[in-house]
Length: 508
Image 1 (cartoon, rainbow, N blue to C red):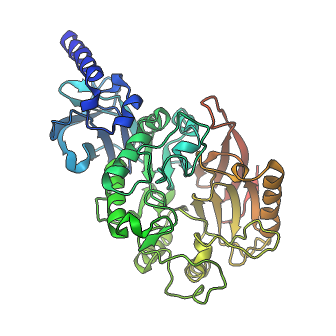
Image 2 (cartoon, rainbow, N blue to C red; image 1 turned 60 degrees about the vertical axis):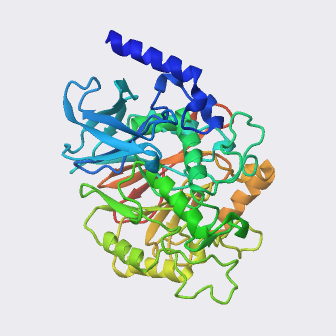
Image 3 (cartoon, rainbow, N blue to C red; image 1 turned 180 degrees about the vertical axis):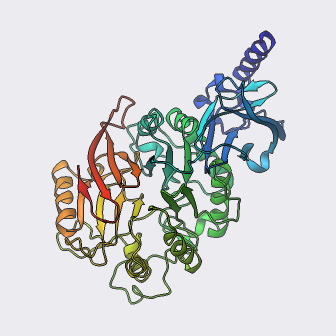
């Protein structure tokens, strides 16, 4: 123990003297916590099943080191006296020195502790949990839209500290691609993007993930909870689709090169099961209680967005947000015998009108921009009498609860599902762009223009917690008092109950 302690002290002292030689962007050096060396980015786990889980870490070493052997171990106790597995993993610059391992042979519904080591120095200890085979209840926190420059990730810390939450699902916009000051609160001098310019290359995307994963609140969330993730657009570029993006210009190189770089970095830095070049959409069974269906509505096969609903090809059947293969896969998942089908959905399903004085505008980057495919999906739910479908949606930076039907009516007899759109972790809400009075007017117009909408909060940041049983789903919209400093506290703003067999939102 004494030798290990001495080695650690000497290693930290050496790092303090020669940080400039570390394989990391120089602007990130002030963000490093020497006590975590060489595992500065902490640990993470994700994509759990009943018998396995993915664990992750990143090692940061001297630039002269081109590869490393890292040991990982997992146990049923925090002191690792009851080990389950211990093995070595290789990593190198080809994977940005990240390590990602699927640990199998675990017991269902069991808490495990895991850690990594290099030359006798340990990472922080992570906590994870496998899925249950026959749960009476299960709790999931849903998050999205976490922009580093808009504020602090205090919402993440709130979830990490909540012992009742079993799993976290990130619905996309885990990072943002912009340069410093382009999209964020320029008054927050301690929250500046690295690199300072818009990210385009593989090294750029890796560096931006590095910045985010050095954030203490996000690090703690990954340390304490298993996470399932999917991407939206900002993991690549704003309003992305299969062949391009609104925020990709000709002078930024080939779109295919940029997309490939962003996708590779995502697969390196997130604790996900799919391998590079495998689809990101996937599903998870939580016993017979939940089929957790994770979509990719962004880049798998999405065709280009249109400007508005008056263009000639707006209703064209060839325009798609999922693609034929993913839509067929989704329909098969909807026909399973699980009590609840929870669809992890990046962009608003709708139909939903924007808060304009004249009720005519829709959100073209969401499913409203792809009416043929959206109506095909809703018809499928109705025609096949598929009950207990809940869409949980990110992207929109507003907390909105909707009873889903074809035409957006107040009546409940034509409902086929419910949609719970979640607010952002930090990204801008209406009050960042409008006065309090105008933001309130916009909230009122949302509700007036959409009689199927039962709740709207367009000015606060937060997340959604679902507590699921066979009888019902209880939805809790959790908001935070401030993200502009680290003193923000969370509170419950609105709760709903969805009873089995009834796609109706009941306020509690």
